[in-house]
Length: 103
Image 1: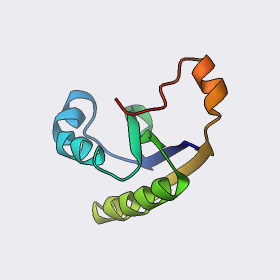
Image 2: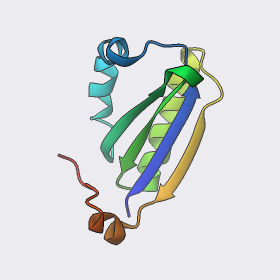
Image 3: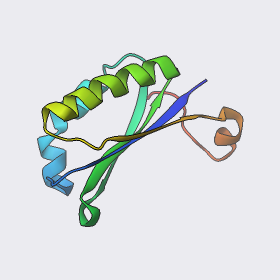
């Protein structure tokens, strides 16, 4: 069963196009994580928050990624990471055109 993960954390920037340029290498590396299917990058400059919504093939892969990512964020001095795990109801999600596979 696919697992959706939402990760939010405080961030001072960069935002928008600058964020896209600064984190391009990181974005490309995420594609290589075990069980990774896709990610939507999210940002809220007015609230000073950033993060992502990820889809993984299993909870085990999702938890392994979050552990590594939380440690990486701590290395950048970012604390206060919030994580929500949710199982995906694939049948209903497909009715609403959700893409639940890579590519």
